[in-house]
Length: 285
Image (cartoon, rainbow, N blue to C red; front, side, top):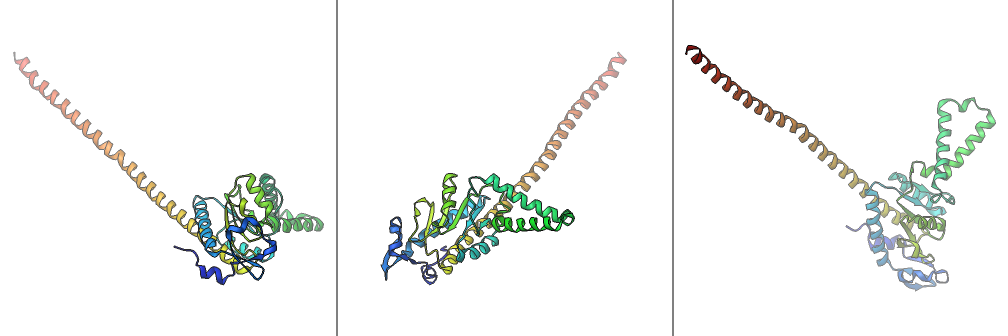
């Protein structure tokens, strides 16, 4: 089943690229034509690529791993943050800190620091500090929340990255390359798609275009989560059936052993009876 249509892409302005003088020659395979000095993206290829990306991302999520959403440009950050929250996926919508992936251990320390500040406010220690100390801690907490709030639940490296505008997020792309983390991204006519595993040729500046492509990816994630949930339920049901069968098995075994003992007892009783029958005859002689 198609997740979107040619008309949906057209209505969202996904086909509008950049000025021809700003193009990247590596995007030529995704460009349909030039009109009024602007490159027009081939929506047939966009349809194909977005379906491929959605199918791949669905399998990643189905396996129980996380996809990190990255969108720090103004027109994309709120859209992406809302969509990522809806499926409980990590996101970066402010500034990409250098080493966020390649130096993930240090980033985790900063996240832990944020949680420690939260503990101070809960256990009452925060209220015992001076006004100046409280103000400093509060400022630091706000700063950490702004930069790292979207990845506070990310305990290990993400399985994949979904990016809006690969030119702007080039540091994230390079870090993902170093760590062999698959990348999914909207690539405009001024971008280099060669470093992206699943490029989606699309207008990465218009809010409607960003919202449409991101929503398709989110739907795929929802499908993956739903299938994972069903698989877990089926597995739990199978385990319950297996456990019940195992619990019933010893009873059958016990019954068979009881039968053996009963037969053995009967045999012994027969032998004793025969011995008793012969005993009086010997006495009479």
